[in-house]
Length: 109
Length: 116
Image (cartoon, rainbow over all chains, first blue to last red):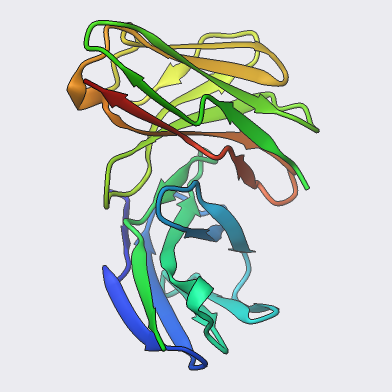
């Protein structure tokens, strides 16, 4: 079966660093996406990894290990506006997105 | 960047009526659009894949006669919720397939449907 796991909720402090993990089991693999979703809004694209390694984009970085079925999203210099849900999604062999349930990130001052 | 719009952004309707939601790709042509439903605190659930000029492909458990999808052009797909019931109240989000090299989907802002 296809399965994506990520923590339900995390709390971090403004200015700190937080790592959100995602493990997956899917039928085929055509990449892993991270999206940010604020309450009541549609998801917005953050990153896409299809090869192993770390992709850095400003304050956000995403890592992928295909052999381990594992990814993480790293957020640095946290700001209050980073409070949101972070969705991990993989693209399977049929090019369909399989979504995790999302990790609610709470930023405290 | 690629922009996808949805209309309306929110709608309240009475039980038994039908509601049409539009999804448009504003600055690119989308041969494939996807319709998702998201209940509070739950993940997005793919309802159907819509290809321009052909019938939509529905996911298991999604009633195709209740959720009518039409993808009449390369920039417009519509979802009609027929005979809506309170349990259909949800956040409906469309996405359009974008740059092939990224396999990326561009999301519309979503439509919040409340059925009373």
